[in-house]
Length: 321
Image 1 (tube, rainbow, N blue to C red):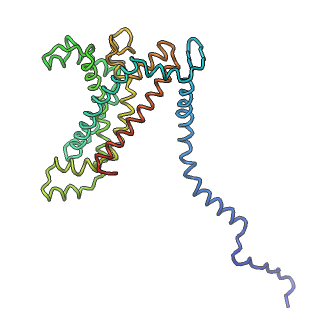
Image 2 (cartoon, rainbow, N blue to C red; image 1 turned 120 degrees about the vertical axis):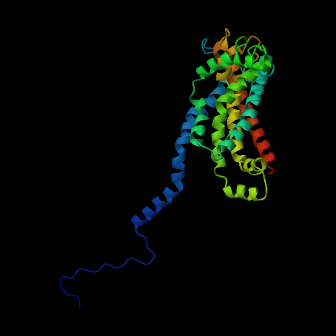
Image 3 (cartoon, one colour; image 1 turned 60 degrees about the vertical axis):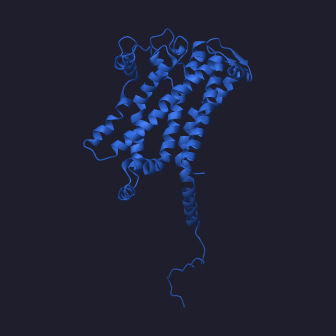
């Protein structure tokens, strides 16, 4: 018999049953695990779509029009701008200048950065001071760089001509102007790439070098057979970044030609006018915004092609398929 005043005992929950609150917490936990990564990366894609994707699509739309900013012209042109671009001799001239300066600056820049990083990776006194010093050009104003290099490459009183015991007009000759601009680019960005290579070199296990030294491999052989192969992903990254920056080169040639009447001309015969300078001159100098947008899209496709070529080159050089 049950005594008076005792509370009724509730039946125990059935085996295997899950309370509603527990099911809700489990659902939130699963949702947190699956959705959190997307929530963390979502801000990047939102910012990219707003500041990258939309301008890219809008530029393509503008390139299909006869578009003028000052005149207010908004006339559908289809692929007329692109048709004119393929027959525009000045566009191909600017493209040749761009690729020429890019090759003259990027190839020595990568080699110098690798050698500099390999030197900084050794034991040396005041290593931190030297590592900080290689990035000093990055904090230097481009206006100051232009003034200094303008004096160095001056035709009559320049230090470079004095050193070479010659009288080279660096602003008039096409090859000479390419070389001078390439030197400016290399001086500014070699240290930056060297620090990237240095960070990757310090991640390489020291045991590999010790084993190679025991086998009698010299430092040069260790560099080319251990360091460089293990740096292939980093080399690919720096090549692609240098390709993007090199093909979009604008500031250095503009400042190099600051003494001319029109900075965007790239000299009297357009000898160092790059694609970005030609694009700017058409869009804002001659109010041909639609044609400038077409040049921008041609440059965008050119960067993709060169980046793919860099990828294939590094992959083939590494012996992978």
